Length: 195
Image 1 (cartoon, one colour):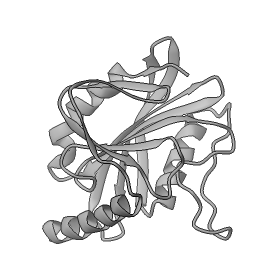
Image 2 (cartoon, helix red, strand yellow):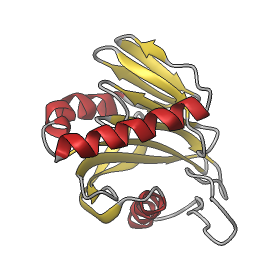
Image 3 (cartoon, rainbow, N blue to C red):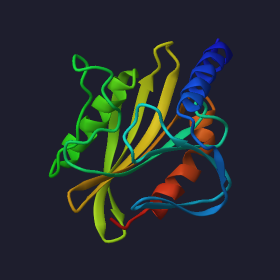
């Protein structure tokens, strides 16, 4: 059953990427930057490019394909900006507000995941992190896709000069998340914000 869900999700992701006319390119091991959000990857990832329907500063990296593992690198959201564009006026998506508490930042990201059609979203293990000289927050995520596939994730949010820098990793809870968790946590630990 999981294979059927993954095939369907992969086909949808391929359409999203193709519809965005994104340039897909390899990201070799080493430094990677998306605006002021800089990380270091330990092996080759694939930059799927800017996402259709997302804010201008959202990049998607993957190892095995965007439905098997996806690392969103989100560069410096300004007040009033969103991660995901609203589909219509009747269905607005969460917008960033500067000066939110760490708990409110977590709620902002959870609400964004709901707008991305994830269900049963839970956040836990909220912990402070240092990103260079800046303080941020990291937390764990569990959710389900529309088809009921269990998803696990980790997010790291840092506010700097009234902008929000986000690293968000999502993968199926079965196998893919744990197989890459240590690597993703190392990537998050390597993060620097230059904005």
